[in-house]
Amino acid sequence: MAEVKLNEVTKRFGALTAVDRITLRVGDGEFVVLVGPSGCGKTTTLRMVAGLEDATAGDIYIGERRVNDVPPKDRDIAMVFQNYALYPHMDVYNNMAFGLKLRKVPKREIERRVHAAAELLGIKEKLKAKPRELSGGQRQRVALGRAIVRDPKVFLFDEPLSNLDAKLRVRMRAELAELHLRLKTTTVYVTHDQVEAMTLGQRVAVMKDGVVMQYDDPQTIYDRPTNMFVAGFIGSPAMNFLDARLVSEDGKIYVQGKGFKLLVPPDRATDGVRGYVGKEVVFGLRPEDIRTPEMVHGGTEGRMFTGKVRVREPLGDEQIIYADCAGDEIVAKLDPRLGIQPGQDITFVAMMERLHIFDKTTEQAIV
Image 1 (cartoon, rainbow, N blue to C red):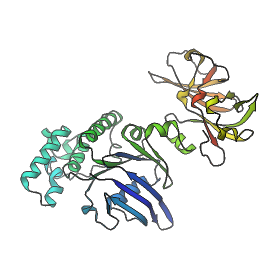
Image 2: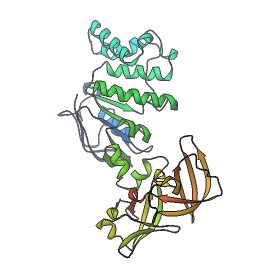
Image 3: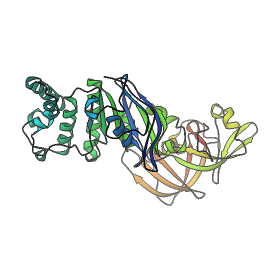
Image 4: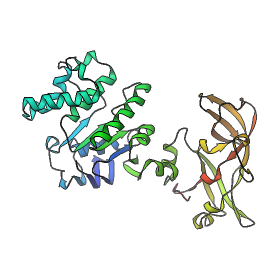
């Protein structure tokens, strides 16, 4: 095992900067996820670590070894691709053994490693099957097995679950997490799916336009996003963003918009927030941090606002409500058993202890 370090790594394709001066450290045995929308540079970053793309600038280390000029086969990494990349004419055993045969590993050792990996992944009975005879989940396990038998210092995953159906993705996420707990191999995992990022990553790097916007543990990214992009990308449905102004009355700070005037709790009214009194800001509140009076125990003073329900999405364990609040759209996650119907007026309660406030110009978090 080994840590992976990227120091000011840049990748340009002609005039296009795909990755812009990324600095990251993945600890020995850590599971780190690179997440972001298509075209943000996450796969290019992974491919530079693998040696499939050359870095235009910066340094890449695996352990203490600078690997910029080291061929992929000599970096002691194993990569699992989105499309599995299995040899269709080979059975499962030979797909998993192929890389070891190229490296002239003794036959008995190959057999030991392949059978051990197949046992670990629950595909021992499929060793004689061809890829066309396997389900999508089984093919993915073969691809994982091919990586495991190499016993690499680093696993690199490039959207490995994106070709699976939703139910199987959930199952494979759990299996990958359990696999990492067993093997404890340093892992860099690329996905556009924020649920995969939050559930798998010990730390998550949220990327946009080739830049890491925030690199932290999943809960910190969710609770304290550093800017509006991270706040809007992580969480489903996305955070509500409302144009507002901070005002001061009787020593209290309020966030005021077209259809609301809400009290900023004293412990959230930091010096930074007070410095924005009288200025335009963006008020952020997650859908799960909006309630109705029936759902709240305790006082609601300074936390209530109203809207008109436009759409209701019942999901069994919750319902998503889309409402109009003086021209602003509000999305709320509410108790599914509340008798809410489209067209009705509704009173909301904002959990203001969980508010977010952003600079309207820079989009950076104030609180």
